[in-house]
Every structure is written in C-alpha cells, then in structure tokens.
Image 1 (cartoon, rainbow, N blue to C red):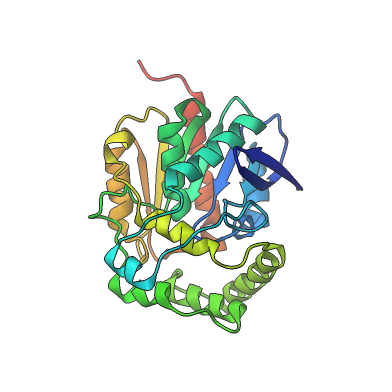
Image 2: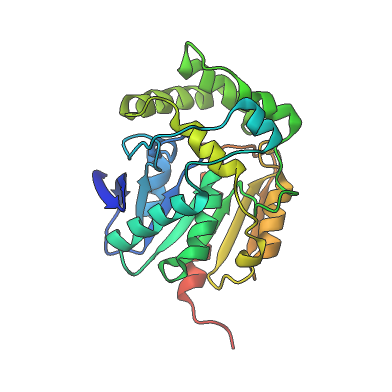
Length: 294
C-alpha cells in the first residue's frame, strides 16, 4: 500500500493503491463524508488478490484531499430537498475521471458505494472511454421517486455533532447497518473512525457540502440507458437509507446490468458480504474483457 497525491484541476486528491499497476485498475469511490479508510484495507487487499490494481481515495472535502469553501445544507434544506450546492456530483465525477486518466489511461473499473455510487454513475456517463465497467452499490438513479431515505432514518442526518464522534459513528452504524451486527462489527467501526479522524485535515463542514451535492442531484436515468460498459448493481434488502427501489431502478435503467440484492444487508459493507461483492465485481470486470456475443 502506498499513499500519493494527484492534482485534478483545483483539487488535490489523496489516494492509496494495492496490487500491481500492471493489472487492470479498480477505483473505489466512497460515500457521504467518509474517507478512503472506509474501504477497509482487508477488502482492498482481497480485491487486489483477484488480479486488480486497486485505488482508494479521499473525495474532495474529505480526509487529506482538498477541502473547498462554502456553505453546506441546513436541516430544513435536507428535509425539503432544497439546496444550492457549491459543487455537483458531476464535479466530483470529474475529479475521479481526472484521477483515472492520470494513473492509468487505459481506464478503470469504477466501483462506488452510497453517494459514491451516484458519483460512479456520473463517471460512467461523463467519462465513458475511461470506464471499463461500473459497479453501483447502495445507489439510485436520481429520479426523485426511487431509493428515497426512509422517514425513520431522517433524524440520522439531522443529529447535532456529538462530543464523542467515535461512539456516535458506532451508534449510527447500528441504526443504518446490516442485520446481525456483532461486537466485532462495532470495534471495526471504532478502529476505522479513529484512523479516519487522524487523517482528517478539514474542519468538519465538508460532509454538508457533499450532502448538498447529493440533494441537488439530477435524474440520470436517460443517460444511464445509453451506457455500453458492463454494469453491476449491488444493494441490500435491509437498506433504509437508500431503499432497494433505488437499486432496482438503477439496474432497470442500464442495459444488461446485473442486479444483486442481498438479504439482511443494510447501508454498510460488513465483512461477511465481501466475498460475494468481490466475486460480483470480478464477474463484471470479466464481462468487459470478453468479446461481445454475436
């Protein structure tokens, strides 16, 4: 594993890599307000072990990448879905496209989770020549009808900052995460949160700006319908943050997309689902290398 920085426009992106640069690249795009650490090192190493050069990175406004200035979104703006974002998901996707172009002009298999899945969709739309395949995890197409947050989860986004951010994150994952969570799952969150916090260079406002970009997302359905790369949609049936209808609508929009729905999986990536997810990513990447039938 190595840490490096790549500048794309005005954004300096911090990234780490696993595996051989000679192998096909997989770029992992994380979700709202979360650093590259939330793509766990064990997951990255296991994926690299399947023959990939795996790159995880801090999105703009997170970790050691550039933190921009400007307002985020208020609690009322989140509830009413009204926001004036400082930047868009498309801007975040252009960061990813620039990173891919700089690291491997051959392109990358783009994998995104939660907000990262929406960014990954925009990468595939805006940078098709750099997108070998698309994996959308816990995502939605932005149509305003599917993949909505369960109203029971709205308070999760409106909670004031905690005096103990580590235990607050543990409690959050207990509420939004997969069924059957264990003490080991909680400890994993603690370790990851401490590592992420130690790397953080911002003032804590970046997540609000990312949330504004998410609330202000556009409907990507028609553009997803024009994608030609292989695509995987991976979604938990117990997800109450982006409900399963979002995954189904995404899969329906993309030609020949594979839909994998996981019983008991919530809005997280517990270690027990890693083998199935890695196998599905590998299967999707393999479709990109095989000649088209006919």
